[in-house]
Image (cartoon, rainbow, N blue to C red):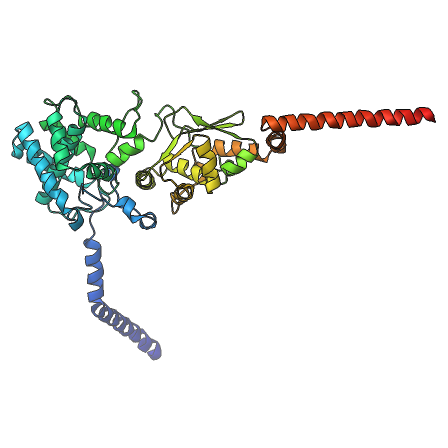
Length: 449
């Protein structure tokens, strides 16, 4: 009993010692615990409106392939490249445009500032990364950049504004003008269209021939891309990179439904040269939309692909935007992956140039093949979810049918030119005559016996 009592007395003491030791550990690691708490508390609260996010930094894996394709050369728009030493010269130009904007509209700056302040948080929410600028500097950036874009676009599009156009040519040399248009389509170099629309509505809508800024932007992009948007297409672009993507897509009625079956995959396709050897005919399509590919009765129709120095930059930024914002509607990415399968060597490029499908502004077939192969590098792509699953399936099935290969070989080797047709016919007649002569000889021999 005594031992039991002693044991009973020991347990509370041991428990107290254990608790004491625990408190000691708490004191020992208190600095680490506080550091972790501060780290967690310093995090920004999650955005309440994640759906508004639409302007992203380029993912590292994509950026490293060609950094220049994602970095503005002449002008910075928005906060991501604001303050770049390389672009300081254009900051002065933007201020000249801002002054011209204020003189044109004769509008109080206070009203513009108050309106932008009301929408500041919504604008900040459009960027995937937090903006380090304080409120006043951020609003100033929006006003200067937004008014510059309005003035610049209006000067290019307005039929009755010869003065503005003349001033643009004085302020901007032709080379910078072309580069600037490209800079305005970079994913990292954007202002949300809705905030430019607010400025336009407050100051310009009653004075300009365009009712909305979006209609002005569409007019300019139609001239840049030499393509009109379908009238029934509802344009809901969030910024210029999104609008550039819209011009590459079909209308909503013609969008190819993405394949939902797990049986079909768009992860293997024979090259253009291989398909041509198997009898596939290549024809330039009359469609102005790059994505309108059709394969019917052994003929693959592909819209004309015009490749110039600016093409890689435009395409790369559209692909990056789809990767970040449209992971399940990446129709242009699907198209680029298809081209990378179809065009693998300069031989494939040469074939499509001869068919009028590719217009090569690079001057080198190697450069075209390299470009189209590299555009899809490090891009997240699921062959089961491609818009072209059906096309992949049909083309591969055509190639793998021996009947088509035999027919193509016969036509290519014996009936491709008038001389070959004549030679084949002569050989056939000679063979027939030889056969007849042989039969006659055999008949004569048989009669003799």
